[in-house]
Length: 458
Image 1 (cartoon, rainbow, N blue to C red):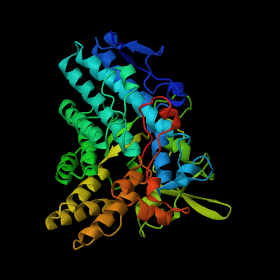
Image 2 (image 1 turned 90 degrees about the vertical axis):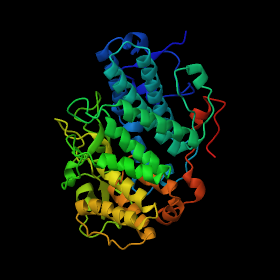
Image 3 (image 1 turned 90 degrees about the horizontal axis):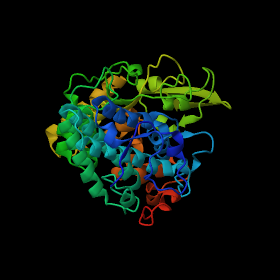
Image 4 (image 1 turned 135 degrees about the horizontal axis):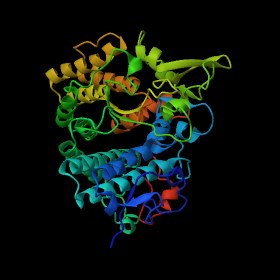
C-alpha cells in the first residue's frame, strides 16, 4: 500500500540541507501525521494546510520567505548586495554549483508534495463538503504558485501530480507548455472551489480572488490577452481591494491592497515581521543596509515620485550615498504590523494594462493608459498622454512594472525574460554585460545528482 503523509510543521534542516537525497522524501519525519488520521476531522485537516504556510515563511533565506525575491532582484536590475555572497547573481555568472540554486528548486517541491498529500487525503476523506472544497482549492492554489516559479525559473521541470514518491523521484522534465496547462487547470479548479470570503479576519489564506489574481498573471505570461484582461478585471472590480494613497500602508498586515499575504511564523528571532525587512533594514537608524538599488533604476524615478521617497531609503558610507529598498519598514518589533505581501491590486492594473495594450484595439490602448495612470496617480506623478502609440505604452508598462513591483517576487527578472527585453536592458545596466545565455538559470548540481533523468537547463 502506498504510504501517504502530511506535514504539519517542517524543520529548517529538511529545507536547506538536501545533500544527495531525493527532492521528494519517501520516509515520514517524526513531526508528520499519517494522512489517513489527519483527514478525519475538519480542524485537523485544516491545520495540515496551515502547516504549509508555516513552512513557506517560517525561516529566513528560504524560497518563499525572502530568497527568491532577493536572488531574482539581484540577477535583474532592482538591487544588489554590497558584499560578495551573491556576486554570481549580480554578475549573471551562475553555474550548477552556485549557492542557493538548490533551494529555488527543492523547496517548491516540498510544498508541492505537501499539497499532493492534502489533495489525495481530502479526496478520500469524510470531511464536510465545504471544508473539502476549501482545502482542495488552497492546495491547488499553492501547487500552482510553486509550479509558476519553477517553470519560469528553470523552463522545464518534472510535473509531480501525486504522492507516488519512488516514481516521482525519477521523473524527467515536462515541457513549459505542459506545466502551464497544469497550472491553469489547478487555478481554474481553485477559483471554482475556494470561498470568496477569507478564512478569518486577515488575508493569509487564499480566497477565490487570490486564485483569479494568479490566474490573470498566468494568462498574461502566456499572451492570452483577452483572458488576462477579463480575469484581472474580475479582481479589480472587487471593492474589498483598493489602491491606497498612502504608500506606507501597502505592506501592512491590514493593507486594503493586499490580495494574499504570508504571515511570518518565527521561533528563532524575536520580533520579526517579515524576513525581507529583517534582512534589508539596517540594525540602527543611522546604520547601513547591505543592499543597494542599482543606479540606473534610481534614475528612472520621475521628479516627485512618492515611490522613491516612501519605498526607498538612503545611507551613506565611504562618502557615497546609496538607496536601499524599504517597502517593509521593520527589522524587528512587536506587535507585528507587516506581512509578506505576495499578491496585490496594483499588479492587477498592470496586468490589465499590458493585456489591453496588446490587443491592437485603439479603444483598449486608451484603457491601458488609464490603468497605468491609476498607478501613476498614486505615485503622484503626471498622467500619461492618451495619444501614446502602442510601442510607447508597452515601454511605459515595462517601466511602471519595474518601479511599482521593485524587489517583489522576482517580477523584474521574469518580465524582462518573458518579453525578450533582458538582453537589451541588462546588457546596458550590468557592469559586466549580459547576453542571451545569461537568461538561463542552471539547475543545481545537487539536484541533478538526485535523478538521472534530469537534464541541465538548455
